[in-house]
Length: 206
Image 1 (cartoon, rainbow, N blue to C red):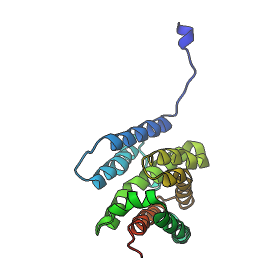
Image 2: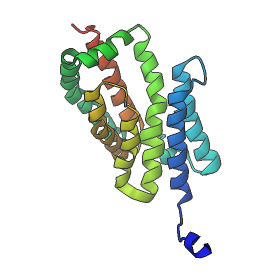
Image 3: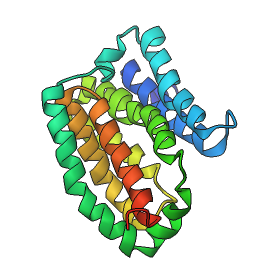
């Protein structure tokens, strides 16, 4: 029996913590409300908890996980270019896909842009900061795909056309963060995508 149970498994503690904690945080977000405000929940789960683990358990600076300005000379033009390229696609989907209109149109209100901005701050730090740069320490550029998988799975329940695209969108957001060494630029791009989608689906832009 002892021979059967013998293994030579050796796990990287950092990778194990990233994988287990990130999975649990996504599950907690799905099943529970910690506060009356979803925006606050998202920032507790996806920003405060990872940040605390980074500083207290990993004993590393948040800047190593993309929490910095990064290469803004590259980040700003790439973000603006991304907005220009994705806007026509979002327009076609938001106006032409019934499931997109039904899912997003009702979300339009005066506070929506600000609420989306605040909610996505924690969300993007989690995927394009903590997971991306955390996995990159061991796996290098393969981290672009590794962080895109849970990101895509977290979209299950949204319109199919959106969900199917998120493995590629997650990779693209990850590449932008990886290139600039900061999660801020995919955060701004994602905020534009989310806000523009609601505005188009609700018919607010004509």
